[in-house]
Amino acid sequence: MKKIKNPFAAMAGKHDYNCFGCSPFNEIGLQLEFWEDGDEMFAKWHPRKSLESWMGILHGGIQASLLDELAGWIVLIKMKTAGVTSALNVKYLKPVNISKGEITVKGKLISVEKRLAKHLGSLLRENNYTVTTAHDGKSAWDIITRDAFDAIILDWLLPEITGVEICERLRHNGDKTPILFLTAQSAIHHRIKGFEVGADDYLTKPFHSEELLIRLASLIRRSHQPPISIFNSKGFTFDATKHYVCYEGQSTELSQKESAILNLLFQDPGEVISRKTFLQEIWGYDFDPKTNTLEVYIRMLRSKLDQLSSMKLIYTKRGEGYYIENEA
Image 1 (tube, rainbow, N blue to C red):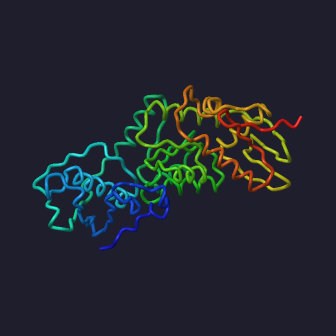
Image 2: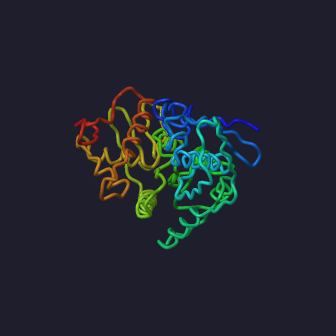
């Protein structure tokens, strides 16, 4: 039997991690801790009187929350992936008396249905894509490094090798294939990490099929565009074809999305490029999806530029967009 270390507590920190079920920082939450014992996992919890329904009886909604949270952690630990509850069928056999003290909640994985991969494969084939699927990271890595693809869709927490590791390895090896993360990891630090290791786009579950198709088509279209030219400003040299920026002999590589953003800015120096234009030209949206994807990319791009020089290249015009100064 071993205690499970909560990875999110250290990763996200006190101000960003407020899960009702398992965050140690949420004062009104359950603050559950988990143990692993062979095939089983369990949590021990002391019920609070503030969570009762009828006098002395633990509220049924809290009982369901205990089961739901344990199920999520079983998927995380046993399957090395994240899941979202789509249905929870609870049968209450008898009341849980708060006065009896500590409660033990046990569970184990009974079966695995690889429905998401099957659904994605069907969706993409219906839209004239040729699809190869893998249900674990090792199989995915073997397939990706053996065959050529127009785009790759990765989950964050795959068994054996994580999607993050696969993305990082591919970029380290110089593979420029467009990569889209499709994952339940929706926190801002997860998005930033995904872009840091080289992802071109990031979509969280649950998702709309139409949005996935638009994002995927946009990624592939951008990757097939012919070479553009080289731009210069304030000592920076930007090569939109090879996706890099250099300054006084030092250079840094850019992702395809970062390169597309910088290219759009360099097309009209001095002109403010609106959020709507970025989303339409780079992501293929004709609407504002109300996500912070663009802002995350701008932050990552600025960070890379700052490592080359303290000279400011990208400016923000609050409420309007971004621009590069016209040196003429």
